[in-house]
Image 1 (spheres, rainbow, N blue to C red):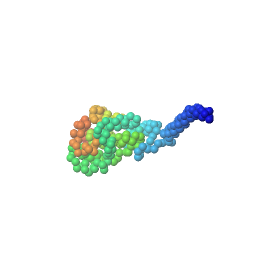
Image 2: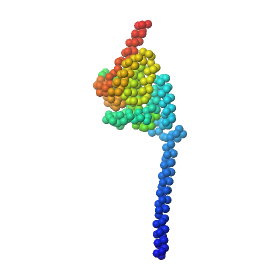
Image 3: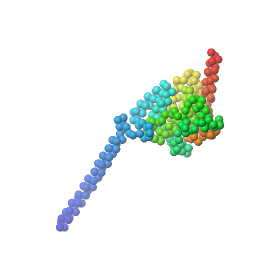
Image 4: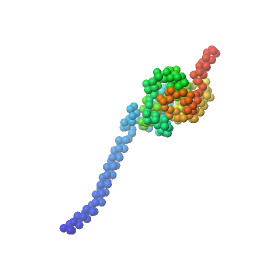
Length: 291
C-alpha cells in the first residue's frame, strides 16, 4: 500500500511541471489568437474601414488623405472661392501635428479649456443676430453683425468637419472654421480675394495650420496692383500681428459680444490694417476719372 502511494505521489510530482507548461502554452496560444484576431479586426484598408468616431466622420487611410490633400490643394489654388475644397485640404493636412498643436494651445488656456468643455457652436440662432444689431456700434457683437451685413454672408455656411479622426480635434477645427468671420470683423478685412489672402496670412502666423499657409500662395492669382499692395502692406501686417497676438482660437466670442471691440483688440495684440475696402473704392473712382 505504501509502495503504491509513493508511486502515485512520484507520478503526480513528475506530471505537475508538464501540466503547468501545457496550461501556460494553452494560455499563450489563446492570447496570441486573441491578439491576432484583434489585429485583424483593426486592419484599416479601403475594404475594411472602421466605424466613424463621431456623426459625419469619414475615416480615411493615409493614402486616401494624401490624395485628398493633393487634389483639393491644387484645385483650391485654381479656384480660391471653392470653400468645400479649402475645407477638405484643411482637414487632410491638419494631422498628425498641426491640429493637435492648436488643441494643446486651447488646453493650456483657462478660456480654451472652457471652450473645449462647453463646445459652443457659432450659428445665426446661437448668436441671436437681431440682438447683435441692437448693441452699441463700438461693441464686438455690433462690429461682427455689421461686417456680416456689409459682406452679405451668414454664420450658417461653414462645412462640418469630416476627415479628422480624433473627435476632440474635429471640434477644434470646427471651432476655428466658425470663428473665421469674427477674425474678419476684428480686422475689418472684406471677403474679396485680396482680403481673404491677407487674413489667411494672419491666421497662418497665428495658428500654423497648413491650409492657411497654402492659401497665401493664392496671392499669385491677384492683379499686379493687388499683389504689390499685399507684399508691401498686408503681408507685413499679417505676419507682425499674427505672430505677436495671443492665440485667437482661445477667444470665447459668445462672451465678448458686448465688450468694446478696441479693448479686445488691445488684449489680443491685434491692430487693424488699413481699410482695404476704402482703398479699393478710391482706386475704382480714380480709374473712372481717368477714363
